[in-house]
Length: 373
Image 1 (cartoon, one colour):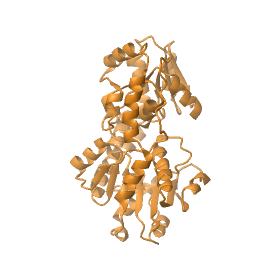
Image 2 (cartoon, rainbow, N blue to C red):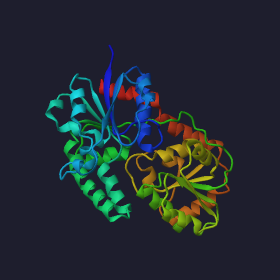
Image 3 (tube, rainbow, N blue to C red):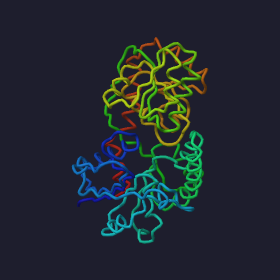
Image 4 (tube, one colour):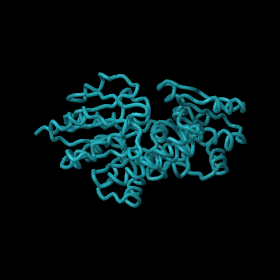
């Protein structure tokens, strides 16, 4: 018997050029390879329709996302309200196939009584109210700060409201615990993210610089990069490269203050992977302990030593593969020890054991299928 599944995606999951579409795309591909007939529904937000997705889906439907004041509400988070779409709901009601919603963003239908008896599965990408609170704390613009704080408060109420109306599959054990303890969720499990990697390709030996990478237009990432430049590498006289999308003038100015710090803006995929392979140490602090850090997984699969703080690895199970420091002094001490230390075969074996056991797309797709059917 054929098994059909509706998937609602918060964005068009191709090209796979930012963290938010990695898990949806490779999950889609893995479910297709397992024989699932996929009906994909994508919200558009500046990305073009992707014919690549037709290879994996019975159908691909695109819906406009509402913009501006029309999607603002005093009771519904903007990320949810802007994706409320009657055309999508009408399409979903034409059959009784299970519905997988990619992120809190896509859950507008949960409170519609017409879907009360449908099997609804939420793929939880983050504890969103905590993530938006972090964006509020990291943002410099007063207008954006007000928006992030308002959104965080709405999300806290909304996430609690829907926590027991759906089956929830979280990307980290930490998010499972948060939803159980803070929001009272009872039907929640951990399903690791689907990744583009199958083998650990970390080069052995010694690299030639330290590296921080991320989307630098995100307040949290700019804050982390600035902290590293000011508090860690101002004293360490080793080459330090910061790279990622759309860095601010502030970051460029900070990078130019030091003769051993370099900023590489908007690298292509190949250039980014080349830098990851050549780096001696990946420095990846975070202020956000929800979700899973895909840039950490990229570094673990393809790079050498990784230095992180507790928030980066919390709930990931990757602690043993990283060097964890809690403040600037600890980071400086660890970096000084590792900068001339070759990355070896035993460390690569440990990563292979940890990563390939947890992030196995075929096995995780089979687990997801069992939960749905």
